[in-house]
Length: 304
Image (tube, rainbow, N blue to C red; front, side, top):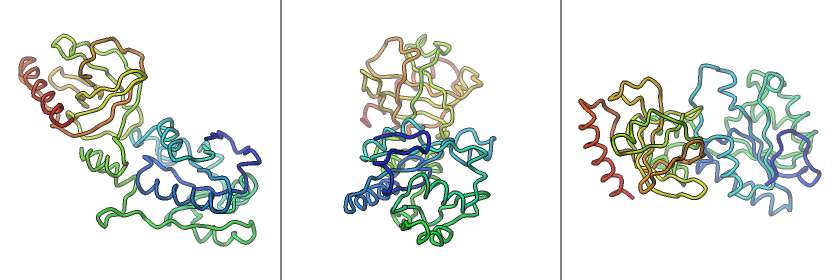
């Protein structure tokens, strides 16, 4: 998969099939869109790619939103590679781009830069300055610029529309097992291990600590997890929260990896959430906390 951080596409990737959207999470709905578009490209012997935006537009427009993403851009790329795209266009979402009128977006981006033949968008797709463009706007330009819109119907599971917004709500509620079904994989947080207070190590449960950065914040508490690095793939337990027993002030993801007791500082790890075990709570003493951690570990191992 060729990744473009600009709009200077190779000739072999022009005049193809393109799906446009944020694609945050690459959930089952996204996967269906991508698979349908790829089949269309194959049938017509055309290249197939995806156009997405960085940062996520809602975070660009509202600077107060800090924790929103289901996956990072890197994770998004990894998932898209598995879905066999020919190319990915990552558009830098900034003031200049957001100021394009709907007509200019179609003319300057869709027509001049991609010359695409088929354009896959969702029914509620909005684009251009102040989100004034919609699927009706796209239809007006089809003949002029020689492309065909394919409007994707909402994906439903148990009669509910599956969207990134829906999945974020489930993550915030701790409904991880349901989230994983909708993603068709474990929801993961990926980051570099930072140094902590080493309190976990002192009570016999060393942890790898990660900041959440821009990830959506799941329900605070303890989870059964699967941890991966370049050479490790082990189960574990993770606590996400403020560590009230220690009067913690900052939000951290602390993960105890089963069978691993070595320094992973500055290593990049991926923590895959498997099951919510319990809510975060403040214990009377470290001894009570140790007893509960042992119970958590036993429960996590029983859910492997």
